[in-house]
Image (tube, rainbow, N blue to C red):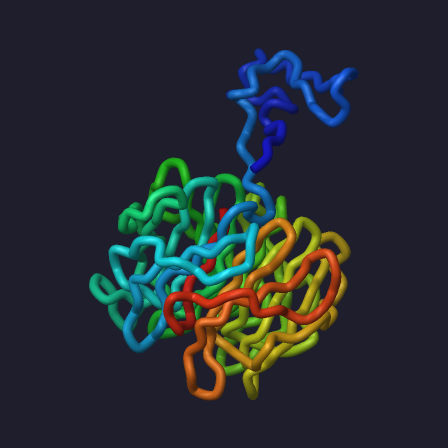
Length: 343
């Protein structure tokens, strides 16, 4: 975890706690690398979640045949199998995942109760520190399923696209602190479902997906600081949907999925350059319905389906050197279409 100076503190806007004067920053002269904040109590600094987690990855729900309640946790610090980590209150698959500093959020999707073939509006959360069953905390503005990858800023979770009886281009936002219902804040560049989700420090990113029966290679982004529509930025090297999305501090990663056939591709694209993605490696098998989680150093790809079978694989790809994924462990169940999280 890390901290940054909030914009309100820098600009002296309401709530800064500095009488509208902003703050001064200086480096400690005796302990190189330690920042000291002047004229403001550190408790007023804004929490910022890291680009990826430092401790654990989580996957929740999944398996369209049974709408699973299972939440799995696996370590980022040592390779190995996942362990069971509590349950969702409502079994879910094809929902999207978001992560605050303390909780994972599972949004939309198909539910074992309270939902229908038209999708769900339920936002449920589970704790990263205890194994209690998740709780229903709020509702989306629009019921959706097959939304898959989600996005997270330090303050809000985002749910993009999906479908009910028709496909949608919604961008929905909900606040982690208030747990108020989500609001519709903009639109994707077109209807899309089963997209990969990525998060940089300033934007939510969406890659791949399918809309109107057409598989997509589009990479698009929307701002975390101001509500509005997404913009078309670049392209993947392949068309895909039901793919895994991961994020380092500098790049987004899209893995697997399917277009006309299931794919092994791992693509990387820059958050800053706006250039098209490059193919950097492969999964161990061609799979769709895979889920992504991100540490600060690796992207993790979990589960999925290949050759008609659900898999329990946990694979990881190195953010510092391009290459193929390596198998590092197994989930407790063979499944796909889960929501992915990290802390």
